[in-house]
Length: 154
Image 1 (cartoon, rainbow, N blue to C red):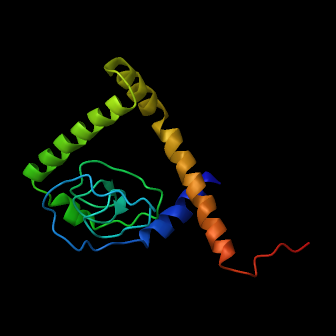
Image 2 (image 1 turned 120 degrees about the vertical axis):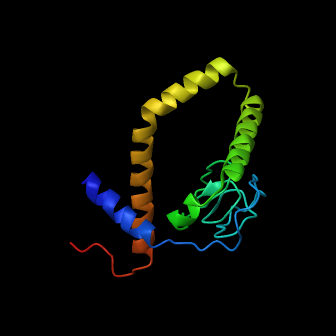
Image 3 (image 1 turned 180 degrees about the vertical axis):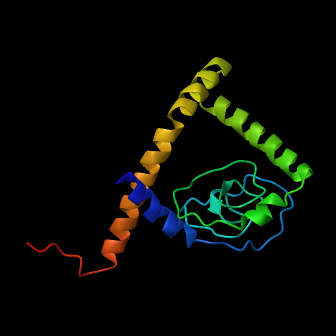
């Protein structure tokens, strides 16, 4: 059942909390880790989670969201709500600049961007559902790999 999958994922994600090591000060993209190691609670790495200032997930003050494929740790929502408008505006500005830079890199013009965003908006729900299903199977695979007694019996 799809709801059971969602609930199991949510329960596991609720356990992944982060306490950021730094105050929210200056939004930035962050450094790229070529090895794509998980980075939690800091403010240095692009694609980290549960930190401050950099592009990633689960943190606060970064210019845009970026999923590097690692487990997502989240900071308390109260901390996220305390970001001042100046930092929010700067983060938005940096995010827009990075978006425009990326569009130029891939050769996408304004018309194509609008079409892409329209398709993305129409399929966002389904994309999220597929990601949740994949996460569920990754979780189950890891859970099974850590438990030798999960061998099939006939």
